[in-house]
Length: 439
Image 1 (cartoon, one colour):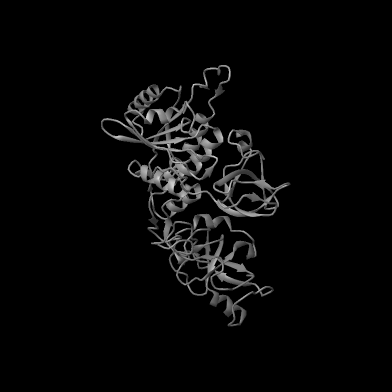
Image 2 (cartoon, one colour; image 1 turned 90 degrees about the vertical axis):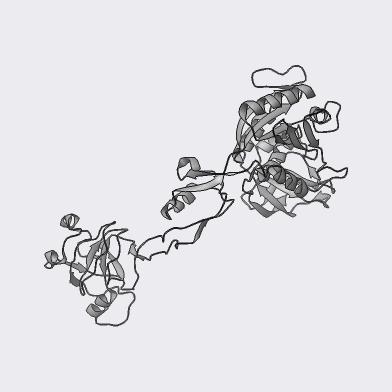
């Protein structure tokens, strides 16, 4: 994990994923509102065909295309606009949920949307293509009645087409039994939840929520209930990281601040972990090369095993990764830099994949610039940006890691890879889409 030279971001992310491997696990949740936003832990397959039977796409009349062709005096199927009207005797009505039954030769059966197609029928003529243009009210009581009771009743149709399969939804046309309908790593959206339910699933295994403690370090940092002293700042990292971790699927069980006191840091973390049975510690600040780097000082004592790799990343190069060592277990610890943009980008690029959150969408987009922008060639740089209606992306704010306002306005991060020292107008770069800022 450690090293004197800068390490690639991918290597550090791999270390973070390995660190959290033992605390991540699955849990089964029902397919309801609580499942939305959760991440699937494995693949799931459809238990049934969807639809389960051939059924009607329209309210209308189920009949055989051969009967229509016979009435027209042709063997060809297809559009029949302008064809003469034809009258067919009616069989019993079929409603959704009824048994399909059989279509008597030369007849039609009233059928409702979603109702099963009867044996012998191969198309549906919409009710609008009947002489009345609507169903007779008496049909409402006809569902399931015997064919012979309706032998004298008839319908006059002027079909626009006698194409077999017209307005018939085929069994399995949406999903076949055994199809993979959810893959590991996918987010459960309302549409996916509805699809899973339609396929016969009642619950699904998802990533359990990792229980996280978020701690902002620094004697200058004031919590929400205290005003900062001269030269101090309000705690932006705590609320920001807590929100980002929750968005990544974690359960933030405690959030606090701690001054630049290594013993106080370790004591507070031990107490919070024990109180909340936490799985992970995430801190901000105290990992750089200054004289008051409290996480580094804590790692020099007992009870903390921590490495401080320099990652080839801007912002967010100084990182800490290790464990808070308790008598009965070691609790994973990710230590991020203290500047708010560095902390949030570290959480985005490192904590999200380590928690099993799905990757963000990445696009290659041309950059719109008014002047050239420099980039440190030894680092992979992430620049805040806005997507434009033109399909281009515009950098906003500067590269400095304290400019949280420009991050709040961003809906993308433009990735300037290592090896590039200048970005010019029109350059095409990989762009990471993030939750949007101002419209």
